[in-house]
Length: 238
Image 1: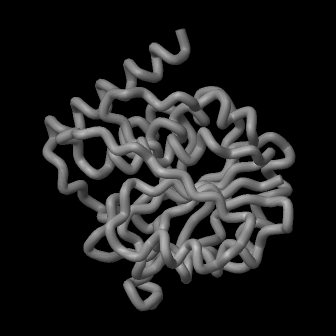
Image 2: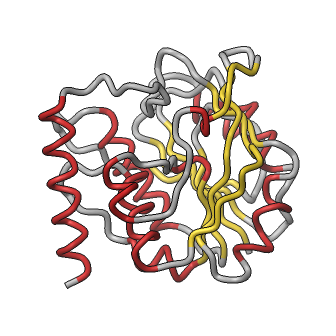
């Protein structure tokens, strides 16, 4: 059984296209877990219009916080992940498009109990290709290498149930799900990288993840982020 996790918030513009690309690759017993962070547009209405029993919608109770969107998204993804019942779990953004061979390519590797990631095409709002994620985030093995410059993006990740149980719960500190899940995978599991792009990663003005060569964050912000992340992982391992 496959579970696909999607964290949504005001995603009416692209959510139908994304769900169309996912549902056609799933079997009848699979599920799409959607955790919504209080959308005020037509996101939920569009999702419900599919009238598909495989889609299960959960509301994430957003806490009053001054945290950046990156961390709000992580909490929303955590809520979705907690609801899954599948043996294999795929993470998905609300605004991308899966290529038709994504599941059939990743599933055999997942069945060997691997943590699997892939490359992705970067596209504009109209799905015109403008590059690949590997142009900016080329994956190389190693915990400290990825602590310094992570190649992980949750929308390209999939993993079996055992890994889900290990990465939960997420820390309450300032940690994004990409870094947290990816670095724990580097330490504890066999990571398999597929150099073939398996999704269209849509780049637009509302993206939370950054695929630019240079981070827009300050040096001290990134230093503190990695410092907190390192000790949260150390705490997890002890």
